[in-house]
Image (cartoon, rainbow, N blue to C red):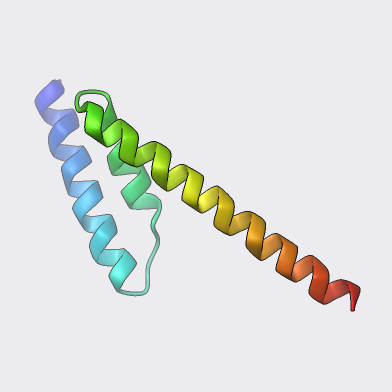
Length: 71
């Protein structure tokens, strides 16, 4: 089961990076990191960093759109 989880996580992570560079979604990167974080402690740190970065970005976009609407 561990080999399947690592293989699927690596495929999702690499596919997510490719789709991030092309017009696509970064959610595959997060899914791949989530699967890899079960067995690889370094991936857990990357997952926390990416979640924190995406949360910060979403807050900035929300704040920008709210200020734009209030003008």
